[in-house]
Length: 360
View 1 (cartoon, rainbow, N blue to C red):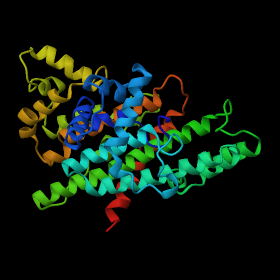
View 2: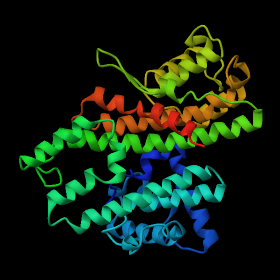
View 3: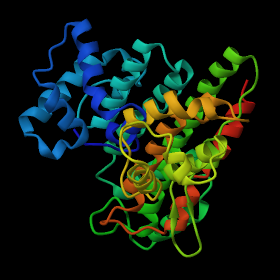
View 4: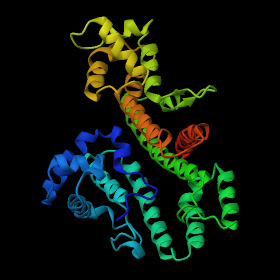
């Protein structure tokens, strides 16, 4: 079974769901269904976060476990790809089905779940078609790039598609070893970013809709304001830093030192300021529970002129997720990308969010 195709592994979206808690939730659901994994929670964590660190036997047990755990999400896969094998379903696909099972269990994000299932169905169908013609790499490549799913995700980067088609005419096929071009790698990165941010846009609309019902007024999304940015000198402004700056402004702090004074714990102000500035600079990532407690017990009551839940802990989680996605894609030492191009890909969130708001 291959690791992933278009959908990324669950570890890439773990910042939205607390990586350490995913195995616990999976085990809880499995226990309710009477399904044994044969793996400890510690091993499950290893498989999700770093599958290369476990034995082949443990990985095989995990694959079989996920197949048993999430069959309810597989009935929508087209008939020609219902047979679960290495040719039709990726490990990432099964993990996303497990995540869907978790969301259904929590009764969360129903419309987003339906949309993810539709995309997973399209991915399984495309992978099946692609595998069926791998003896003809050129045909397989055209099947991929002209498929409904990929065509939609790369509609805003036509130059990359045209360049790849020209390379194909010259005898260069990115599906063949040693013929992978930068345009292909950038297209794949853009596809992954576009796919995940479209799902995020769905989830953000549902989240804010629920908040709007509670407060009986329409609430603005602040995700567009925390999207990553790259300056002309090449320096990066990551989402997490933007969230802290937004909180600083919303709470009317005059300086980072003043903001740090409100942090919980017995450390002196100097140490707290050093820690906060380290978070803002991206030197290290803050602990989720620390931020949750700080927001709930201290910052939230200081907010003026903003909807607390719209800019609160959930926005922090989104920023941490985006930071992780950026690091995985842009800072991968084995891949060379045009950073400006990749950062521009993150702006697709605005288009998806606007389009989905217009959808009845």
